[in-house]
Image (cartoon, rainbow, N blue to C red; front, side, top):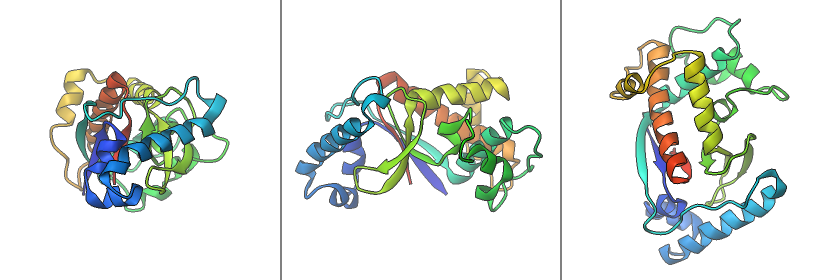
Length: 216
């Protein structure tokens, strides 16, 4: 099943479909102010937990990018990261049907465990272009509960995961992302596809200081 990765302003994201606009504002004209108000309120809530107030380009001319992923690739990447920090556990060769209950993932998400790959394994849907180490649950612009992370931290953790496991160069990663593997492909191949999509999007988000959001 396809899964898009949006990199760009949240005004553009919520304005790309009428039902999204209706969930955020009375009309498209009210969407941009609603996003700015949400960002200001979230910044105030985070307070001293972030080094500077949240800020990124929400103008109509802001750069924007869309990456293509699939749920299997994302799930396989999450498990690959979990097993990288729990090497004593045996990893399945294929993506399990109930992968959310995987024992390595449960350990990585356990309360009090300091995961090296927290912004990969903790169900994050929205990453902001601000440098912080924690993840947190909050309402998004439309009032839905989401887990939020940091673009710079996500990118660093993805690079660290590659360095700790595959040690692949840019050409190899680009090749991994050319096509989605079939559902019965080995877990590692699906994780590589997920990694290529996620690291490509994270690099764009970090370069242009833009939010990155899974388009679920």
